[in-house]
Structure formats: structure tokens, C-alpha cells
Length: 337
Image 1 (cartoon, one colour):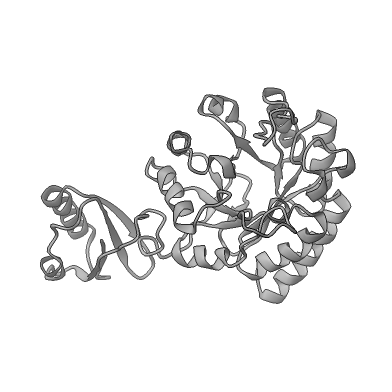
Image 2 (tube, one colour):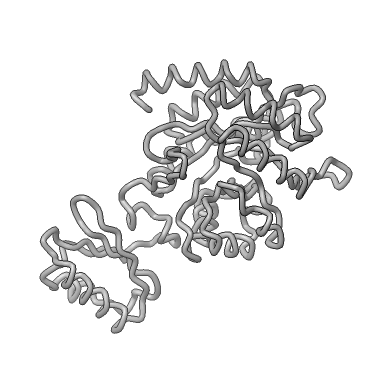
């Protein structure tokens, strides 16, 4: 249930009303204070609440029930976009388009440092790189694990780039102290115990859409994280599995504006994993930004033909620079930052 208060409601009136709702109806109340109004989001069993009684209160502007099962991630509860701000001034969700770039897997300290410097020069503000790699085959390269995390930290220290990297199990959380954004991969989108623990960490999260997950299931996974107190979430569209075999996955461009209509959370697009083909990264990047994406996460490798994972979908640093330049031109045409 959503209750919109009148603009002239005082802080004392709001507090007394909120306390009464919690006491009488045993619900949780989230308060969002916007520029024009204050919105109370009631979470729990709201069926016993008499809407006419609530409407009769002098400080209440309007009341409506919400049918969607996701509450905290719902734009109805939080009309303004969530903006995630980092210590170095980078913002995601404020209308800008941020670039996350780097290799699928961290292979050596020299490799990640070289790529970090080059993608930063091309406009990236966030360095992506996998230290823990969940792979379809148990015989494929699984990542450098803790050593890879050390190499990412070294690249962050040397370049000033933020770090985003994937977590695969709860026990690895202590290794993520120096990580700026925790990535939850598609395979773990519905690993609910992992999501809850990440929610307790309060670190920003990049939540990738599952291989065959609906938009509602995706938002419900975000709800798991938010239910533990962490609202610093970015939703990542990385393609879904369909009957089409020409691409690795089918990139659901329509999901970007749909999610931005349903939720206040920022949306990041991953054209690399969505298509599996390096030559499709540029058109899908431009389409994603035109559709409203708040950022792009792109795989970049200094030598894709020798990459230990996902070389076919990786750009060289020079190719990434070309893509970033074209997206920058598109951003300017669209009036985006």
C-alpha cells in the first residue's frame, strides 16, 4: 500500500501517523521524502487496513494498494531515480552513462594493469574483471581467485578506477573489502542466501538478469537484497536464452525501458555477454543507451585471440575506444551527460 501525504504535513504529524500504522496494523513503513510530497510505503499484510479510514486523515493526500510483489524496488514507492554515488564522484543513475570495461578474467597483474590504463584513457570509470569465474565446464579456466582480487586492487590503486567483480559464494565476502561494486552473475541471480548476505554488506551491487528469468523474477531478486537494507543496486540486462542460435543470448533491449518504468533502480547493459560476438557490441551499446541504459559493461582484452575466457566477445582497447567515442556522440545527440 502507498500513502501520499499532503505537502503541508509536519514532521511531527508524519511521525505520529507512521507510528500509529506500525502499532495498529503491524506493518513496516518506508518513508520517501521527495521535492513535492512524502510517500509512505507499507510493507506486510495490508489487507486489514481500511483505505477510507486512512483517506480521512487530515495529512493524507491519497491512498492506493500495490499489487506487485516487489515493494522496495517498485517505482511507486520511490518515484525518483536511485542515484548511486561513489567516493571519487562517479554517479550511476543521474542521467549520465558510465562505462565499465575490462577482461572477462584477470589473467595476470601485467594484463589487468595494461588494460586498466587503456580503458581509463578511453573513458571508462569502472574496471571490470573476473577473479572467481563460474564456468559451464568444470575443466575451463576458473579464475585466479584471491590472487586475482589482489591484482584488481593493485590496478585500482594505480589508476583510480572503481572495481566491479563477481562473487560466487558467501564465504568470499571478506575478500571483497576493496571492491566498489559486487557483481552477482546470471547463474546466481536466484541464489537467495547469497543475495541476503550481500544485502547486509551495504556495498553497491550489479545484479545480472538470469539466463531465463522474467523481469518480475529479476526485480524480486533485487527485493531480496533490499530487504536486508541495501538499496544500492544496479540491474544488468545481459541477454536471455531463447531459441535463437545466431547469438550467445538474445539481448532484451525492451527490458531497459520496462524496468526503468517499473523500478527506480539504475539499469546497466552488457552487450558482450548478451551477444557473444565482438562486432555486435557497438550496435547493441548504442541501442542500449538510446533505450535509457545508465551504463555499459563491456569486455575488453589486450589480446582477445589468446584470452583464457570469452575472447570471441571481447574488444581490444582500441576498439573499446571507438565504441566509447560513438556512444559519446549519441549521448550528446540525446542530451545526456
